[in-house]
Every structure is written in structure tokens, then in C-alpha cells.
Length: 317
Image (cartoon, rainbow, N blue to C red):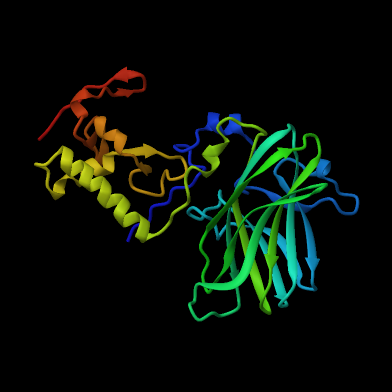
């Protein structure tokens, strides 16, 4: 069983340069510390690097906490990836709970916001997938808020959902807030996970990249994705049989997030058919030399260097 995951924020969809040029703020919540702000003596300006500020507001008596969770994440869970975990215990039907994440808007103009949310609760449902409770996303400033998007609440198991929207003519130089609003229609406890929060720079020319792609995960996405790639390869190399799987594995783009986690250290990327990457199939020491066995269809066109020196390649069939 395999899983393919593509997120809006993978570098192939938005490069580092594009991200810096277009995004005012991007949060994946890795290595973050949530701290309350806007209440008491703590203000937004006192939130330090590596922290994430929040303000809780409740129309009810449920106990709420905000922590960082390294086990529930929209990608593969690891110590370097995390989600913001908003826990709401013993909420009652009809109550409303808000989690505000504030920031300082630096320029006037249209602002786009994108986030991924997963919401689970204790209330059972007949379908086992959704109940009627709602999770909303809004952009808030001093004179009101704009509704941006929302999702149903998952029951029994969680899955990531996208919420995004555009706030027009945002006012510069004032503290704005992203509002995650939970509308409870059942007596239940809830767990809200938030990941990949992005806020574009005001008037950014390529801000629509934020919503150009959705997030998909699971075998229902992986199967047609991989079979489509196999079909393309079969069309280009009709004489190839099942042994040609190496070519498929060699059509990968290196991803730091996947390095050491999958065999190819990368993501399937068919443009690499023009010059597939070699696959290391074996390594051993032989007397005074190290033998590295590579498999690939374009090895005759590749140049290798070891410690800066050109290396002779011996081709074997």
C-alpha cells in the first residue's frame, strides 16, 4: 500500500523564492511554542521568534488548551514536523469557541489566506465520517471580519481539509487576526489540528499560487497518480516490461522532507524522463576500491565526480 501526498506548500508548487516574494507569513508550526497574547501584559510584540501567539475566546465553559503536536501532521509525522493542537474538552451544544492567531499586516491591498485543518470529536455519527458541527475560518480586523471558508467536523477519524479565501483592501499597519471558529451542535470534546497556515503579502502578484493546488492523501489518490505515470512511460518505451520499474523510480525530484523516508528520497516527477536519475542498487568494498552499482537508462550521458575528481564509469549489461 502506498500513499502520495502533494501539498500547496511543497517547493515544486511554490519555490522558496516565490514563497519569500509572495508570503508575508508561513507557519508549518515546526519547533514553535504557542503563547497567549493580547491578554494581560502579553502583547503581540512580545511574542518571540519560534513562538506562535494566540487568543482564546469562548461562549461556553469548556476547558481549552493550545499545544504543538508532533504525531498528527498533514505530511508524514516526524520530530521536525508539527501541527497546532487546539483541544476543547466537554463542550456543550450551542456553544461557540474561537482561536485567534494575530499578526501585523505590513501593507495595504488584497490578502490571501490558506490553511489546512483537521477536526475530530467524540460524538458518533451514522456515517462515521461527518457530523453537522462546523469549523469556520475568518479574517478579522477592527471594523469586522470576512468569512473565508470552513469545513465539517470529522468523527471517529480525522482527515485534512483546505480552507482559504481573499480579504480585499486590507488596512496596513494594524494587528489583524485569523479566526478559527468552532460551532458546536453536540455535547462533545473536540481536537482541532492546524497546519500550513499561509498569509500572502498584500497585493502579491502570484498570491493565487496559494490555492492553485489542493492537498490529497491516500491510496485513492496514489493509485491513479502512479498508474498515470506508468502509462506515460509505457507510451514512450513500448518495448519495456515490468522490469522497467527502475525507470519509474528514477523519475524523482529530490525532497529534503522525504530524504531517508522513502527509497528514492524524492517525489515522482515525470519531466525527469528526459534525464532520469540513477538508482543505487548495491554497494560493496572490493580490495582497494569501493564499488557502487547504479541502474538507469541515461548513465551513458551522465558525468560523475568524487571529491571533485572525474570518475571513470564501467558499464555492465
